[in-house]
Length: 257
Ligand SMILES: [Zn+2]
Image (cartoon, rainbow, N blue to C red; front, side, top):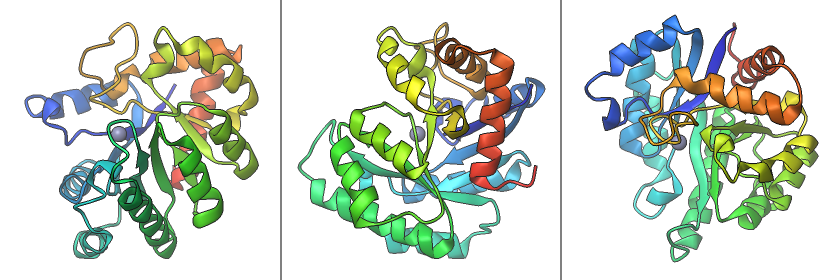
């Protein structure tokens, strides 16, 4: 069984002491690919560096809604051009997050749209972060700006709006450790509707460690617990899940496996 972590942050300071040790462990436990995701210009640069120094790691670059006010998409574009970008596979994480504040809503929406345009111009898919903003996310993706090279909704937390969009447009959704948490039975109804061909898994390491490691520093070797839970929800075998989500991720990121 091979695993593909579609979203992780190994540049995070949580890994400062033992990054290489953990990445070696990932390789030993059959993690074949990791996409390391940037959330700001600075992190995107770190993400590119990690990808360029590890064969099995690729990267994504983007400005997270948290930084929508202060960071500029033109600087992201300049970073892409200045660095060796051969392993940059996506623009993300980008999107909308009204959980902490809605005050900068307009900046968030503008930055989101600009980065979809950037992704289209670079012929790359986008990785979308959406939290407490599903209706606006729906509106941007559906009416404001079409992402032409693929959409992956990261840390997918289903709502009626988003599930409708996923089904209408054939988007990919990534499930993470939160599906193993207690309140997760609400996922069941949605998971029945979303075809396995549109599902991938992610850790969002160092965040969101699944049960039984909830609360610890997450890493890509924990993907198996997420797959186990998906198998339970989808009423199928773990092997079936692992194989499908791996192939879906390879296809989404267009990796020559
Ligand atoms: Zn993330």
